[in-house]
Length: 155
Image (tube, rainbow, N blue to C red; front, side, top):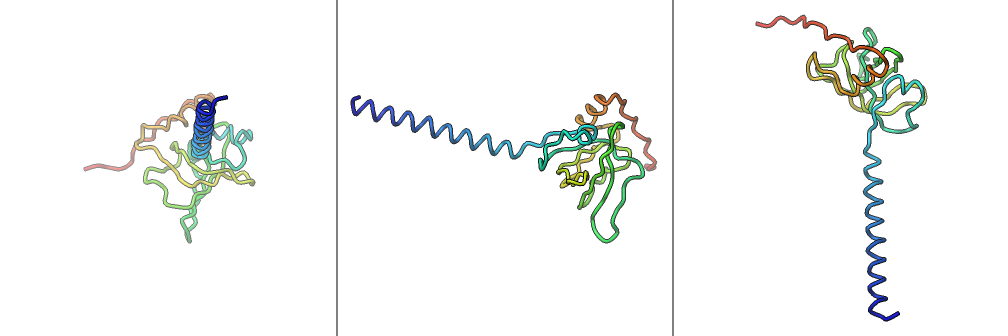
């Protein structure tokens, strides 16, 4: 093989290897940032990968919200009306967080079956429901509940 061809071959192999490493690193970084959505039914069925950071969504079970008076810890449960998952969150809940409303929480499952939420996202008005929650309810065969009428009086 001539020296010029050998240099070209080495350059091409080095470029292909470099692109392969770069693509591999990008895919690895993207994999770490993916938050897949799981419904309470899927969580209870054990379909959640262990240690994975996920989004869990459902309706907040009425009467399930318990606040710790000494800290920002809040415990509540979410449901898709087929299964219920307990959730623990440490922080300030969104203003629109209410019992009986749809939410999506980001976090991970603890070995004891409790979802440890890092972030809680609530709907932005009483008619809106997160698309993932609506799809999970539909898949569970449950019609999403109608929003409750506001009790606030305006002036």
